[in-house]
Image (cartoon, rainbow, N blue to C red; front, side, top):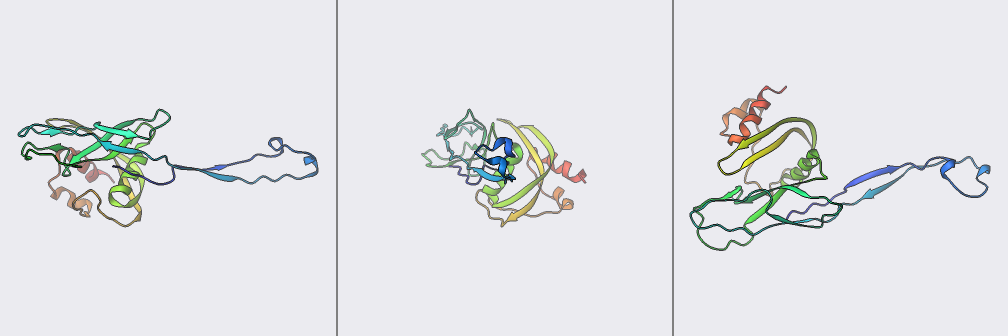
Length: 200
C-alpha cells in the first residue's frame, strides 16, 4: 500500500474593494480588504498491487499497471506504477513454487493530475524521508530491456530538508561527480551518469 499525506495546495484569496462588498451605508466607510488563505487537503488514495502468478522456471515481469486504485475522483487516473519483488521489477524463474503473501510492492505512482516534479518530490519523501527542490530537467531515458521498456525522466535536485532514512532501498552511497564512473551502473542508468559528467 502506498500512503501519502500532506497539503495538496494552499491558496491566498484576495477579496477586492467596495464593488465586491455589499451592505448598507457602506458609502460612509473607507473600506479596506484583507486577503485570506484556504487549504485543499489531499484525498486519501489507496494503491493495491494485484496478485500475479507464473510457473516455476518462468520469469515474470511485474509490469507497471497491475494495480487497483481506490479513491480517485474528477477523472484522475494512474498512468504508471513501479512494481517490485525483492526490490526487482521481475520475479526470476528460480523462485520456488509456493504462495508469497504481500510479496509485490507498489511504489513510484504517477497520475494524470500530478506534474513529474511533484512526483519525484513525493517519492523521495516517501522512500528516503528527504525534502528536495527540483532545480532542472536533466535527461529522458528510453531503454529496452529483454522483457520490458523503461521510460525514465530525470532531474537535478537539491536536498532542502529531512533526514535520510531508507524505507524501500537496501543501501545508499554519497558520491562526488568524479567518482560516478567507478560504479557498475544498470544499463538504463548509464546515459544519466554520462550526462551528469558533462553537466556543469
